[in-house]
Image (tube, rainbow, N blue to C red):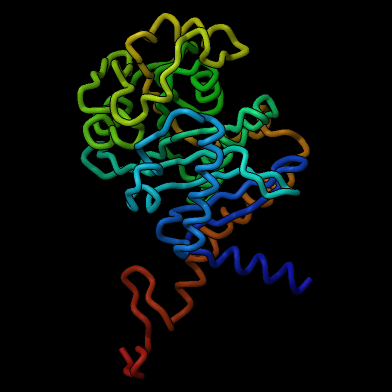
Length: 325
């Protein structure tokens, strides 16, 4: 009982997420928020080395030069890494590197979580990892922020991913689903992302942007060239409507992508848990989400009552030199 209490107290005190849970039989998933700031250099180097192992298996004859592989510390400071490893051997088999972007919305700063680069070792494709790589971390961040709706973005030409984002999140545009529409908020965020954050998803300045359709034209020019696919080899969705949508809207020869924007909210979280998460993984996921939501509710109260350290604009009652304030 004492060890369990210690674990939860430590988890509740973490300023950034560093969470490991068993997502399915034989696999463990680690989610690390801002590893460039939160991890010591040796641990950060080890994490990047694990990501490179997966990348080398995924693109054995190519290399990527953007995002976390660019060598720029900034990317790992604003990234959220989801790494899946084999439980017995520790071998890394898949990862997702999310990025947090600051984008203006209605004249105020807003955060958009970009779903980021996903890579899966070819040896384990088809083992049901998509629910972890495309939704788990977004759900965890949603819980971490006190269940407040969060904007997400996604850049892809893969029909299976377009469909997963459309099915998982709320208010997604573009999408072939009935009722999908581009609000002024969608348009503002898309413009801000294209103006300030092309490097996050490896799109060069020469790429065009069709605002009405939210389609990036000639997208594979900024370090992501190795990810360009033909329609024939791009993984398809089980619902043909997404495959037809991508074939109709995107010029694969030129290298087009959709820029999808949507939100993580309670309705989307419920859909994700009910339709995507395997039943055997639900207990660990719900426990982790509850812990993170509790963290956001409990910590402000704890900090408010603690007069020994600063919290926001509040200052401690006594300073280190003993002077009272």
